[in-house]
Amino acid sequence: DAGVIQSPRHEVTEMGQEVTLRCKPISGHDYLFWYRQTMMRGLELLIYFNNNVPIDDSGMPEDRFSAKMPNASFSTLKIQPSEPRDSAVYFCASSRSIPQATQYFGPGTRLTVL
Amino acid sequence: EDQVTQSPEALRLQEGESSSLNCSYTVSGLRGLFWYRQDPGKGPEFLFTLYSAGEEKEKERLKATLTKKESFLHITAPKPEDSATYLCAVQDAGGGADGLTFGKGTHLIIQP
Image (tube, rainbow over all chains, first blue to last red):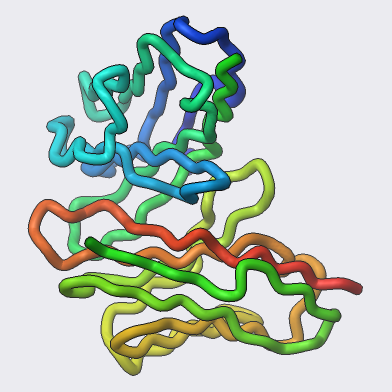
């Protein structure tokens, strides 16, 4: 079975540019999560969806960040405009719709904003 | 606010030298405690879920235990391939709290 797929794996951009990260969850999973990992703060939840509907976006750092899930097999995380402090590894994870369901993580996108 | 603290931050062991990693947590109600392994440049890989105090789970050289305030990941006779960062996370029992709160991890190095 294919796991969670993320693209691109690496992104280098300049400050002020728009960045779009993409995620394909595991087929049959109803939950999709976006996390960010930095050395200083570790792994932090940004936003998550259930059945394509955003449930909690309280972890989104500011209005420059937005996420969408137009269908069950695709989600995007957009940063506009990007800033150097957004540099991090962004992970997407998915899980089934049962209590305590395991979240399976993708390989991540390493974002560098110059 | 849920909090997870892992110790030590880093641990270097000789091959075959057993040890334990600690995960202390604060949560209003625990739905589950999760252990993940993360290799450099990769996403976290699921190891265990523990649901209630007293529960234990094992996988090869790893054994996870849970109390009301902390969890331990015991590593018995580790091998170099066990070198990785081990992450602990909690899931709150509150409604709409399906995300995980992670600790910063323990970076484990097993020397041959």
